[in-house]
Length: 395
Image (cartoon, rainbow, N blue to C red; front, side, top):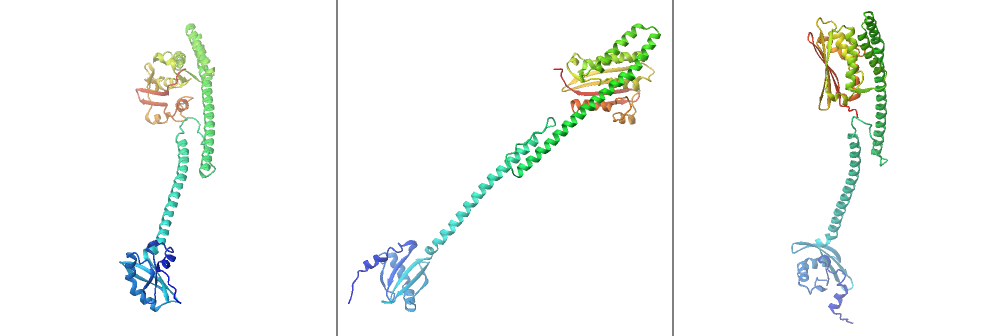
């Protein structure tokens, strides 16, 4: 019995299997390699099949199934076949090598894209983390840089409990210790200043008072009533100053106190020296630590001009330049030898009971390290002591 089937109907049964993806073709051939059914309606299909016909016929004769590679139009193709035993027909599948590799290439491209995306995400996340860390470090750095010489050290706000947060905690603890130490240091300096002032007051109230009373005794013996009255007036005003609790007075008041002190000393030294004052009216507008200049005048009298044969001259000059006030006290005394001058500013110099070193320290405590006392001297010509202070207005 013979059954006749249209080839077209047979082709329609399997034509949709591959849908010709990646250039795929399917044929049904007989035992000699002749095409029984397939996509022969297209010229491209017939041309491809014609190029592999001979190799396909040989492979079908030798094997009932298998595969081989063939070159078609300069491109590698994979040809697979399988024999149907009942009628010795073979199903042939042809696929270009590029089509075979297409899924692999797609997978490879997908992996590369995924890696790039993952790398980009990691890079972006790393940037955000780095920016966050850097921002907080800059914040900590800025707080540190803003710390000046004056005022307490500020704290850093702690936002996170991590390593940077621990660093901020350590910095805050250090700032607290420094602030406490600075406060203690200020208190110590204040006590030192009070002790120094008390020491100076004791000097005036005992040593100076003894000499003054002795001078009054001598004047009384010679019945010099007018001078006794002036001497007592100056003494009372000096004692009033030393007993006051105010540590700062105007430069004008300090000059007046020097005048009272000089008046008493001139009586004691029988007018062997004169003191001249060069001060402008503005001296009443600025403050100075009290009893700051009296020890310098005392040095000029006792160590400068007391041994002179001629009359001694002391000049007190007050100048204002920019943000500084200079008070210069000059004498025409014996001068200070260079080897002695090096030790005058020493802490334990015995030029007077208070010492220029202490005066220098008082100035620095009130006004800062750039201020203080300096000395210029030449043997046989005299000495100049310059006190540099800051501008401290009365109001």
